[in-house]
Amino acid sequence: GVVKAGPVSLEALNRGMDPHDMRLRQIGGSLGVAAPQLSSGGRWGDVVNLRPGLYHLWCSLPQHERLGMHATLRVVP
Figure (cartoon, rainbow, N blue to C red):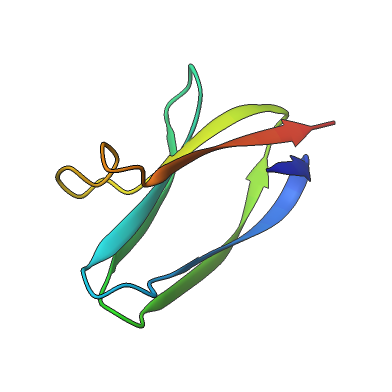
């Protein structure tokens, strides 16, 4: 996905049966956002200020990223 730099609303919604979390890190940077572990049906949201660049989103639970739970977010000026 692509978003404009500045305040960005993030939301994690667990529609699966297993617990999940969400991490966001600018590629080449440090961890930016760490959403808590969510049970089935759980929801988390926050507004974060993102600078232009590429970001990696993923679930940090064991094996989840390897199973395809990841994405790239591009933040443009």
